[in-house]
Length: 405
Image: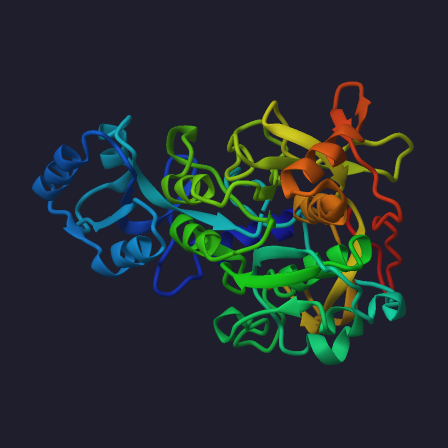
């Protein structure tokens, strides 16, 4: 992973955003002035104590939670109040920042999301076998960067299978005319699902902006309307005191029985809990590298007891966008022609989601299908359960330059 990518990623998240809508806490990112309050037996006292510190209800966001039937309250604090200090003071009372989540980089520092490097132009995929719908499709909800309007013309394999609303359309090109940092992240994930679950349909739900940035509240509200037996979250972040994020934890707990949530483990080479992958009700997916003999943990992949299973995550080839890519530190722009190679746990997670979708009709429920898929994993020493899908997607054929491992 290049240091240029890490520096540019940090600058985009924390330095170049206008107005400054992301702040850096002690080991996590958060929205300024906002706190979220979950269900607690002392909620009335918590609300009174917050009011004494100048908190006022964030009426719009609280009403959105109420419409989604999520018992979460939102408050705004005066600028003089330090959110990290306030959250520490209320430890144990379900009071948390509105944590910022990303499309899942890299250090320094060690708490940002983002893929493990940038996409690289690749040889085109043959989408012919995936261009016609099959019977009894299973739905997978992909909560990510959203739907790009050029997909129907560019990718016939995705044209029929990806659904979206007007609010879920991606804006992949920045004001400078170049593709944004995580442009096409959702489209790339869609292509992985296309190849491994040819009969599945995909609901693309936008929760991340073109730089790959979202937050706990946005993810929670999207989860409440995902309406699919399998949900893929190739995003996440770190939290205050490593405690579960209030809103998305509540939303996952409120999902219909039988729903399976799959989430990327993150790309910081760390065992620190990365949410939502580290939640008990979520299947956290780490990335393995297949390019050096036996499967081994990808050098960037997070790890720990909360990572339930491992799938390929290096040099993945999938559907992407057309345009021009350029980091601020790049001397020249690079053209992208619609297919890319990319690495990250973001791209291991949808492989598992696809394998689960393949088994739902036979197993009867998504939970039963997930159990069957996990039972098929092979245990690797010093790693744990590993699944290598067939046909594999780690078949990167780079068109014009070498992919980053």
